[in-house]
Structures are given as C-alpha cells and as structure tokens.
Image (tube, rainbow, N blue to C red):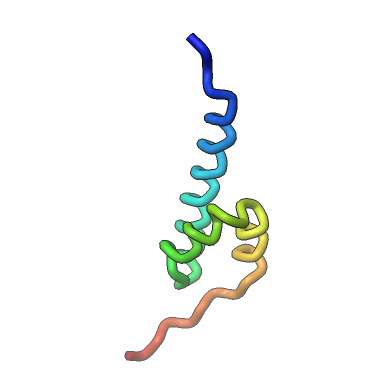
Length: 60
C-alpha cells in the first residue's frame, strides 16, 4: 500500500491550528477565527498570538 506523503504535513498544520484556537480563547479572542486564520498562516499566526496582548473582558 502506498502512503500519502502529504498526510503528516496536513496533520501537523491542523494540529497547530487547533492549538492556536485554544491559545486565542485563552486570550479572550475568537477561537474559530484564529483557527481559520491559522490554516492559512500556520506558524506565523502562532507568533502573532504570542505577541498580541490579552483582550480585556467586556462589561456587557
């Protein structure tokens, strides 16, 4: 049987997107938005999330 050569790469990229979604939610940011952005930007999105400050809780 022939293995898909791109499968580990896609699995790693998808895992990174899930990690970024969790990191974003921890900073009071949109998990879904950052997940989708991470699918496009990958490690660059991780860098942005690490550098961005946490969003303060809204009163309303």
